[in-house]
Length: 153
Image 1 (cartoon, rainbow, N blue to C red):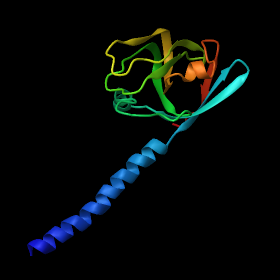
Image 2: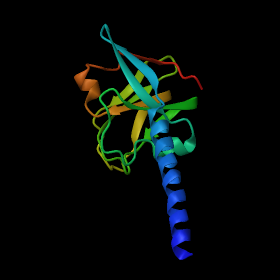
Image 3: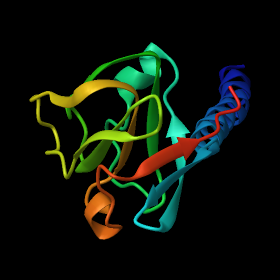
């Protein structure tokens, strides 16, 4: 009887584990396109969106890499001073603080992994875009660039 119950438990555990892994991968795969127009060139990224407070609190924590065309967008319901830290963030990031009109307020390049020092916008912003550290310099993106995206939600 014990062997039968153990076999039944194992057969039920495999599909449940498989489903949760598939759901996790599917959630990460849901991205939106973001375009940064800089110096006559358009750079397109496919980024995750942190919509809820919990998603924004988690951000890119514990990630060990980020695709060159990947990142995360943090849209705010109302413009505000943006303030982030790098607690539990294992990779350097470029943080692009975006005003309501898509112009860039500030770019914090190569933020320090696991730092508790706040990284703050210069003024009120309606979103923050996090990209792999060094992306802004590599693509020659500065505060004169314009950021656009369409979010279906």
